Image (cartoon, rainbow, N blue to C red; front, side):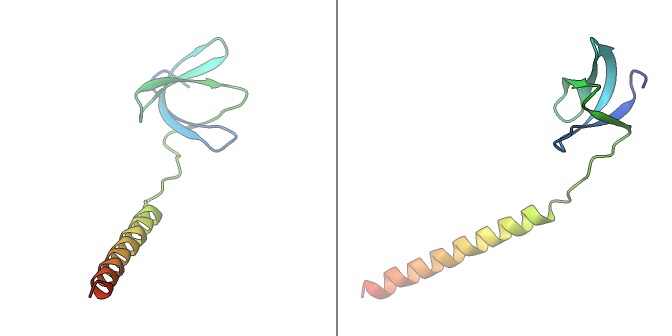
Length: 90
């Protein structure tokens, strides 16, 4: 790796960071995290490095579907609650 290379760092627990290789210092690789704009120290013995952007992207479809389900459930609850309040207040 050379300074300025784009690198994907992957930890054993699955956490991934895409950053720019800055330097090696005291046995650690220092990356500039592109998402948070912070330096990240990576232990060379633990973290696996790949050149380029290899992060598994999630298109967010599951999050959108979950938000839609929550919204629909809330609206049904509001409708049923309003109808029940109106019906039983007569």
